[in-house]
Length: 191
Image (cartoon, rainbow, N blue to C red; front, side, top):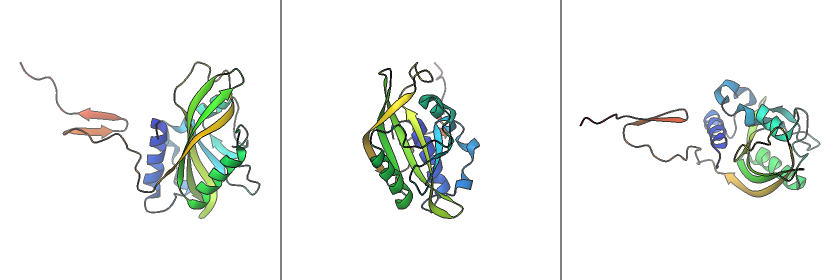
């Protein structure tokens, strides 16, 4: 997980699930993930395997140039079969996946992105929802002007149950973490 938004959403999901394989959809509190909400989505696992968006954040909609609610997750993928298999695996195995991908616009712009897929239970049923995020590695000027038209998968990583999202390393003595900030005790030394 390279992007901070990916780590934040995974950490939140992992904390919610506790000892369960996946949290319930109703456990998700948008206020708790407000920093990454614009990059976040929920997809339904439907019978037709079209995987329609139930919710999609504003930054994600801007990246793709449209309101995504009801649209298929598979629409812009070069290898739709591979993505459908990944979504199905996340849902049935109840394991998280991080997918590194490249997005391309019709104008020739390219962008590296990270797609996070996390299983959710819905009304006690597994295999019904996926919580995820789509985050770019940078924020180029053309986002919102030139939508991503095609996604290509670069790599896929299964996130094992013991992995914690906080890969920030150990804190120095006397340091405390407050959200994304680290407070290090100290101050100006007297001369």
